[in-house]
Length: 145
Image 1 (tube, rainbow, N blue to C red):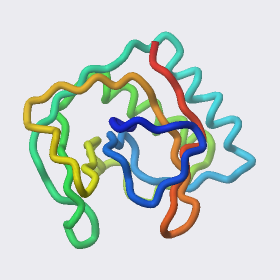
Image 2: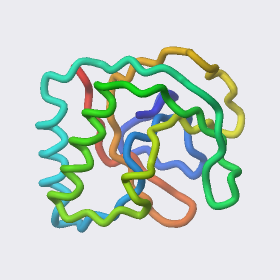
Image 3: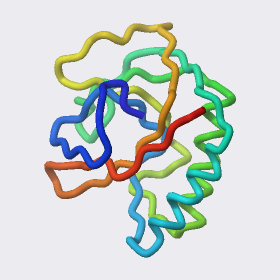
């Protein structure tokens, strides 16, 4: 979910402020319609989810990506587990292990607006595709009712 305003099919090289629920995975193009249908089924009737910022940490190979980890939340954990099940059902290949991954907010380079214990309301999910080493694209948007 992006916290900055974005639009469907938008391409970007610098990540907007966003919440990452599931780590990167690879999925074959033939499985994409099935995966999108699975997400639509998962979120059908799902209300927006309130999450709370916990603490700042640094991720990435060199620990240079500033993130805000999130406090444990049953609704977010349930959504995350269902999304992982959908990736597995569509034979997606995880780039990182799902077990060790923690949902988090990734800061963009200029944004410092998120603070510990701040509440964020997730109102939409975005499916983002890695286009090449420098660009990503929003390929689908899903609204939480």
